[in-house]
Length: 198
Image (tube, rainbow, N blue to C red; front, top):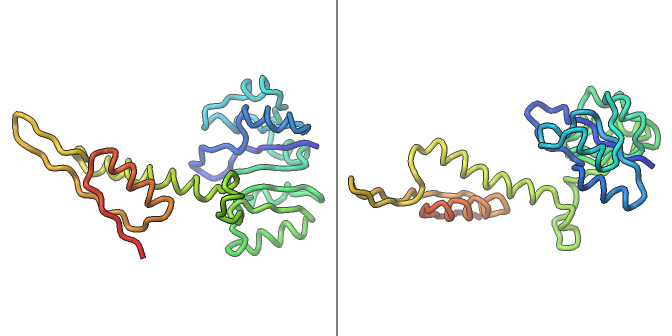
């Protein structure tokens, strides 16, 4: 049985569903791995790293979809990728099934199985597979870094020969996973942080 990882087709997406390390782990379980050429480049993994890990490199997306029994993706299947679905294949990805009934109809018509990673419950037993929390953690961190870039001065207070600069005051709205990451990041940068949640 082959596990395949195509190149993400959504503009600006730099993540990849399989790294060379995960290829090694998947092969230890008895599966073969195939990856589309260039799939890991934006994430810092070239084709040679995947080949060194034991994966086969497919030159094109249709070639990969034809070979793979299980396809893993970061983003959901796009309109252009729907034509590659085949009978008995399994796709593991973000799906947002309630928002994408047409996509699910495409899977049903092709007799393809879908495992929606965004539907994994947020409980302790499933924590290793909880992609929403890990992405929210990154989003909270990045939100503070991006806002710090726009802010125009340091978050931390400073005392210099020219005078005193007070620390920035940051308000985080929402104290879920992303909010807690934002609170931690802003605090570590020296800001005075307040949070609000209902």
